[in-house]
Image (cartoon, rainbow, N blue to C red; front, side, top):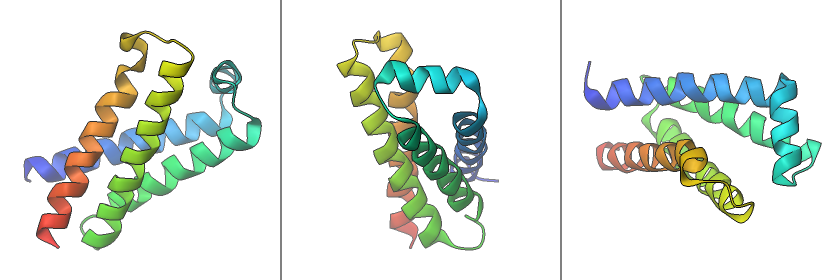
Length: 115
């Protein structure tokens, strides 16, 4: 298994977990309130995370869907990073969004080169 495949599956599984927790856990409900975002924005974010995760996890079957999913997740994490900067979270607290933004950007780029 290539490094790219491992990164794709890692990101897919991580976003599946993040998306589900975003949808159902009280902690994430409180976080989105702290971010100044509504319940519907939290639910949309969670659904986008789950959809992106599924898009990455079908990588073996459809590279185009996986590339679009990675690009979408990278954009989602960019927006998450911006929100965290606006509410003055520390770089440490914001780093997961930044790391996943870069990771999914690299995945999208590498997949577009293959397609």
